[in-house]
Image (cartoon, rainbow, N blue to C red; front, side, top):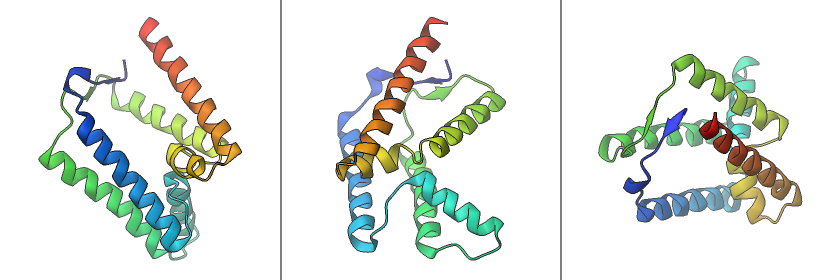
Amino acid sequence: MLFQFDSTAFTPGTAIAGGALIGLAAGALALGAGKIAGISGILGSTLNDLTARTRPDGWRVTFLAGIVIASFIWALFAPVPGAGFDQSWPVIAMAGLFVGLGTRMGSGCASGHGVCGLSRLSVRSAAAVAVFMGFGMATAVLSQRL
């Protein structure tokens, strides 16, 4: 198994708070700046700017930095209990590359389609969410059986 999580250590309060914060951030970005909080799109645009040697938009850099910094701060004060990886770094890197490829093929990621697209009642996002959730469930089941 690539990732293990101790379901007995799950705390719904922090999950609800995290979901609310994600929704608040996505809503603030949409209402305040008219932008979609799709992480793969934000990261992809920033990397494209950097490779083209142009200055990336400040809001994109700030948004990405906030995600990274908040993750480190959370890990310092409240590490995820019972979570860990039991695969080698090359396998984890390959899995990440496949996820990146999937987000490019699907024209967005879970945050863009799932959080922002569904809240805007986008049919395209509903189809994308159905596909990646279906494949995610199938992958989880197959990885448990193999």
